[in-house]
Image (tube, rainbow, N blue to C red):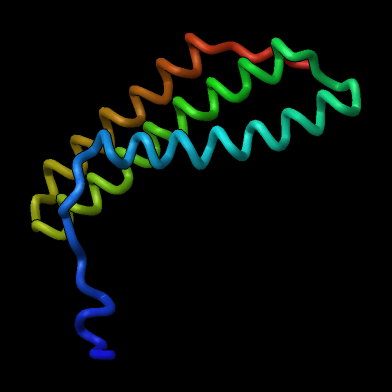
Amino acid sequence: MQGSKFFTLSATRLPFDHFISGALIAGMGAAALGFNEYLNKKATKNDVTKKIVKYAVTGGIVGAVGIHASNLIAQRRYIHAAAFATVGVGGLLIAEKLIKLESK
């Protein structure tokens, strides 16, 4: 294995591809945690569903923004990467406002 290939950055996928990956990863984690809370009667089905949706949306945003911004950095487009990350933070703030979870 050549060392230079191991650390080579690639920018071959689109942001929506990364959104789907992040949403799946975060949604699966939220489902596992939520199911455990439901079994222990610490959450209702509705609470668990909201948690899965919220975590999937925010995980998708983080995945898309993080990976796309790193692709932009690999292309030496630093201002674009910073702008994209800033828009991503705005998306997270909007998701936080729209999808409210019950606090216990």
